[in-house]
Length: 312
Length: 245
Image (cartoon, chains in turn brown, orange):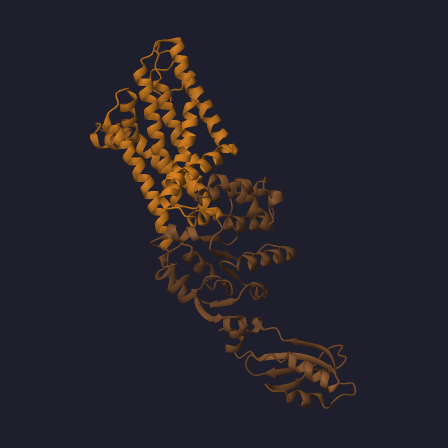
């Protein structure tokens, strides 16, 4: 659907993008991740046709963003960084203006505005001048603007910046919901955001793509293991716990870990490949007469992957 | 075309939704009134309204042109510079619009302001018609000329606004260009030289005077239309070339 080929962008002597290529399929929710200045925003500006690449090409449904700019932009809803809006217009006027340019039939405009206002939560400020709104409302107004024509592709540059934690959760839910039937590309340097909303990550650093895949596949490729944390109270059951655990198929290591306030014996268990050990551990605990105090698959440590990949 | 009108409407209401338009129009009308009714020697043609004992609006139009060289750059300065500063240019240019549509729409919105400001001076021809028996030719020609030269100023101002993210810079650049091209016909005289054709050909004022005489010459109209189309096209081009920076 979106094809980016060997994108290079120079701002004067500074190379912002040094040959980025990727393809985004319909229905993917892609998170652009990277430190500030990595090239995320530049890449989005090129895909949306605001700036042109020094070399390389971007096509959307086979249409070039430079040659067929207007046609491509019709299909895209874009929330630029910092959600620029016209402070002198009310939210309703602003959305009506964008709806006008988006060629939404006049009869549908009011319905569409109410519809998107409901989804992003700006219904109660529709009549207010945007200049008087808080950052959170402006951000959501920008998001409403991007959704007004029900686009197939949404490109959101830091959609949750400036929002409070409750609003962030709301917007993430909205993005997940949108991602069900359309393509979403969002940029962020907030790691939990990516794991919460995206099914694919593009990690970009110094204008280059350094990782591309699902959180799990990136973690695996970076040597991040498939690990489980369990805490077991052996009571009168089979002993020693670590030996019994290590005999489970697929287990590569069982290491005791420190845990404050532990009731039983906490371990970190590593397994090969993608094997989910949890059902096996549960059955084993039942058979061995252990109390299973806690068991979880360890969250992907995106943070350390992010640091490892972006500190070179 | 639809898109152009959507942009134009937004620009027009942006002017009249804020104090800018009202202040500019008030300043314009007050200064025009003062200079029209009271003899102010600076720059004014000899025939002042009461002493001339002649029902003519020539001094009025001359003053309108002079005031326009200051007021219209103040109106046009925000057109693109403000969008650039606020970041809304990114919003506008990532909508399914071409640069030309954006620029032409903005020009038409500013032209709407010019239309309103000019229409509010219609009290003068009404007054002159009530008091005397003026020749309608120069009045119609005068208004036509004023609108053309005003549109040319706005186009130049739009171009200046496309060059920069600073409204003040856009304002000053536009004033300098507008004033230079308007009064260039006086340059040889000021330098103690004989008048020569080139300065007259370039001068907005010379073409304006020719139209304001009431005899509309295609060459003068074509001159202004070329300036307008040229400046708007350059503004559009300047917006487009920004992409490759």
